[in-house]
Image 1 (cartoon, protein in one colour):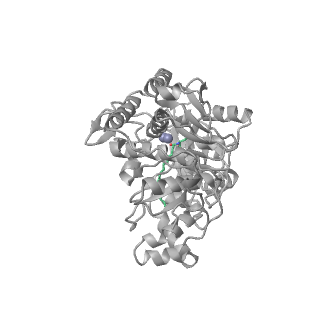
Image 2 (image 1 turned 180 degrees about the vertical axis):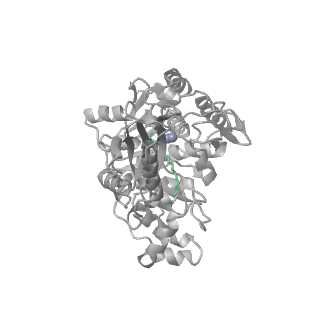
Image 3 (image 1 turned 60 degrees about the horizontal axis):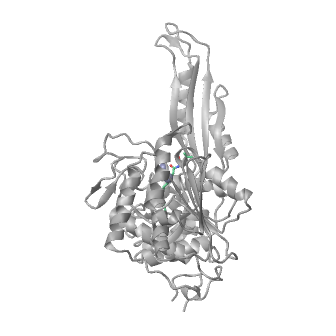
Length: 482
Ligand SMILES: CCCCCCCC/C=C\CCCCCCCC(=O)N[C@@H](CC(C)C)C(=O)O
Ligand SMILES: [Zn+2]
Ligand SMILES: [Zn+2]
């Protein structure tokens, strides 16, 4: 039985594979390299407040740690938007369509409070490397360059060309990094077979009753709206207050938005496919329920709403993130404003969500100002013909043989990959790392950490993935398993 459904096996590769085994010395060097990357505080505070000194230092750092990547004749390195990096790795077979690996350099802020070790120390404790960026996303960035460095020193020459794009402002939009790289490649006429970015993991313990981990490769990501609500009222003396103030009207409006969930959209798309694939991994009676979603769909959609990580999978969410009003204790405020951050389910659009929000607020005194918005990303193919998805699946099965299921999903956050829609229809978000609910909370939270073993496995994954990318033939129709 071939486990790598849909792809021709490695027998069609011309060069022998380089085994993904690393010496003790190399393993020490790779973890030390990650620690050094964590120690550079490449924090993005806002689109206009980036730590540019740290970003520049990071550029120097990768040159020092990965010398072979920077001194190989078939690799072109360019700095884009001052701090982002684009590598073009030219393969020996120009007939093969290139792909791209993505990661980002910047991290969200991390005040020391609550951390067991300082967040930019990169300290190792009990087999874990701690620090901001160990899961989001310097692990990916360093693992990509590390795997390439290790391949190159073993004289690897790829057949299929590929790009590596390292954005410097993902955490604040990606418009000066990923968006510029994308425009540059578009101007060069590049079309990609697929891209792989952050945005999902091997999920362990996220679904009640599911004991075994499964790999979720996100094939879409939610859209978003940042909406500013504003109420203007006549100011006056607080000793004689009007019946309603701008604060009261706005507070009631945002409370209605918080208390009125957007419609549950469970039914089709990646989540349903994932649950159907996972059905037999669940004990009785959940296995029966998930094998018969035609009958139990209402029950399952209700169960999904109950959990804080599965709820965003089934609906558009509305988070009240900012609220401002008032100028003095004894002045009736002239204006109150709030920001609502919506994350749009792939089955809805910006316009539909705005209409629903207006109906929920149902008060003409509340003005709507859309600050920025984009629709959910299209669903990338995950069938037997989908090269990127199948290469990920093949590599997951080889590096994580204990993982039985690789299923498509939707990324609930946004990633730099959305800026590459002009270059490919295959956008996959997957980090080859185990994630438990507790480690999920550490992303943008406290005590973000990765085990040394998990990081080594991530390097191994990319080392194998790049070689799998040289697969001779494009995916072939599903062959019958014997
Ligand atoms: C079968 C259902 C299981 C559900 C489990 C879900 C577990 C979630 C796993 C991974 C989610 C990770 C999301 C990481 C990407 C987010 C990156 C980010 O924060 N981006 C910003 C971008 C913005 C434009 C500044 C964001 O706010 O989304
Ligand atoms: Zn990230
Ligand atoms: Zn992030």
